[in-house]
Length: 156
Image (cartoon, rainbow, N blue to C red; front, top):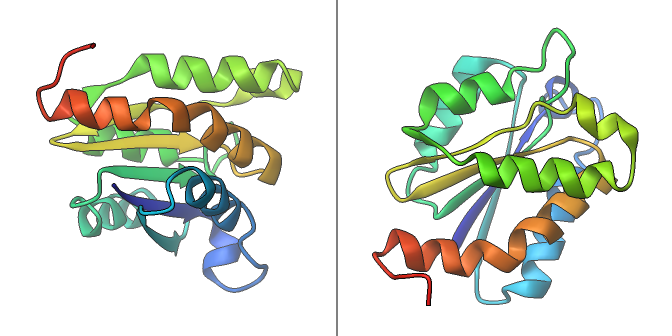
């Protein structure tokens, strides 16, 4: 399994502060999938930069984003994801919001989405450390099954 963790943050991309949510997602995945190939990149909150990063990592099984999913004026991750993907995977976004909502009412402000382009699944996590960790923990149990289904496997 190859996973790219893409942190979307203007300030982290400029080195104003250290990315914490990307490494947190990576730690959750490393514990669950020790043999996985994990890559990380940081890009600014700009649709073209996000879509370009998706293109650089289109060989990944999963591209997991963190950041840019809120209602702020520069939060454009869901739009970039929708523009790049061929299919929407609404159940993933619904599950992520449901698990986050159990922790905080602020989760209802998340606009994160999930989609598929070819054999790559893109999932948006919020940018907070806690939400990123919870998102990875929520998604991890279905990741191998998703890959099996993309390869033509059934629901066995």
